Length: 177
Ligand SMILES: CC(C)(COP(=O)(O)OP(=O)(O)OC[C@H]1O[C@@H](n2cnc3c(N)ncnc32)[C@H](O)[C@@H]1OP(=O)(O)O)[C@@H](O)C(=O)NCCC(=O)NCCS
Image (cartoon, rainbow, N blue to C red; front, top):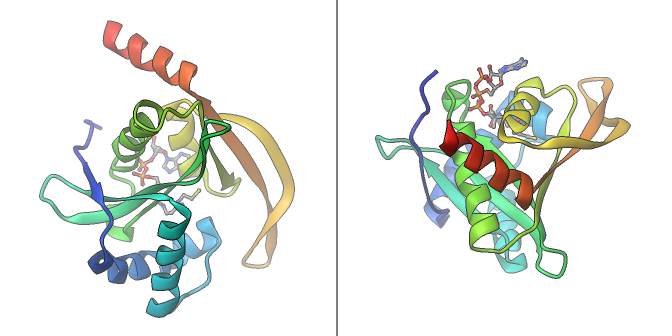
């Protein structure tokens, strides 16, 4: 698959209606642990994230269509770390948009926010997300057994992390190829 082109721009209030649609999709409910939410609940969550200083970016494809969001949350400058999250619109999944969107956000995190580490948690059942994160360079740092309850079953949760030094190494290897 050739690399998709995406652009990140600040996530605006007008984008929240779309976020509600993506959030309430059954796959994202199972994979990212969310229950169906009202527009008002989502608005409050976005507002809370902004107040905490989370870095929220909308993802657009090359036709300038909004196709998802990616964010850094729990930004802790004293430890040089932040947690990354991504959610694509159901119709935009499985087409290679996740990788460039995360890579741009990661570059921001390391380059502009001077982070040393970006981490995430994901459910073991989310094979697509895990494949994507490994491809980017995240490694599994921990496994929480039977941590998430999805449709009547418990699944493990994985903690994954990426260090700035590993990221730089990967980028320079890719340039050399
Ligand atoms: C998870 C998500 C961000 C992935 O982005 P995406 O653009 O859809 O990912 P891709 O289709 O490029 O797939 C990534 C890789 O996983 C592979 N993959 C897809 N389905 C897979 C599966 N069931 N098992 C193993 N690998 C799989 C793909 O082949 C691809 O690898 P490749 O590029 O080498 O072919 C996106 O699907 C999404 O937003 N999902 C819903 C919300 C979610 O799960 N968020 C993450 C919560 S932790």
